[in-house]
Picture 1 (tube, rainbow, N blue to C red):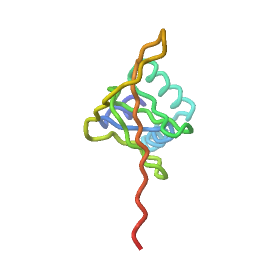
Picture 2: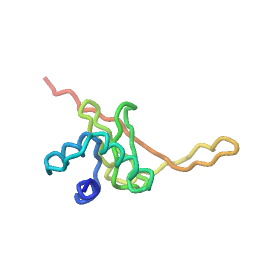
Picture 3: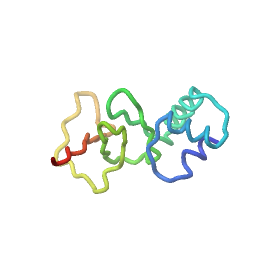
Length: 115
């Protein structure tokens, strides 16, 4: 049931609390811990991608492809960057290591209103 709630709306970013709220609205009786466990299992299975833009909260992305995000500071919203990003130069991995993924999160905030 959680999988249906999660994947039926196309690509999106959800937190455990958001998905739990949707489950409650759909009269699905479960605990928040069950939602966390399910999201973690889906992530381990490669069905979701976990993104922690500020280190205190995790979003789960149904689009597991490599793509950059905007994080709206103060609004706690994560959205996909609509245009393709080009990285001109990647750093070399440490000796004995290889780069496995590049995650780019661009933190943005609303401009103050002109007075």
